[in-house]
Image (tube, rainbow, N blue to C red; front, side, top):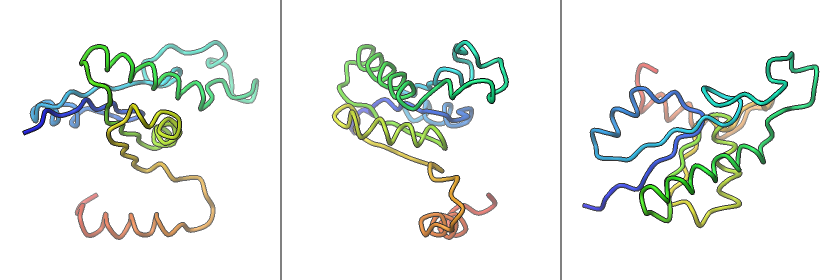
Length: 137
């Protein structure tokens, strides 16, 4: 059996996943992009959003992810990690993958497509799959 590569989770409530993956021998890291979760809040985030332009841009999120990937590499000695992005984290993870694909072994995106008004065929397919494979959700 091959050793599991480290997994970096972006924008996800880890709880049970962290415990489950530990039991299977995986190495799991979780990142809170600046301004999210328990990360440092940039100046201005305590004000109403209409008072200023967006404070945390996708480019900054990608830099945060890259710093985490580099740190994981230094700690574990691996050259590539798996990256899991949920919702907005999925958009950032996809952006990261376009710039740094050589640092990733796997890219997993969940619920990264949202905000569109028109029905999207991928969303319909995901709903059908969820209905068949994930009962009770």
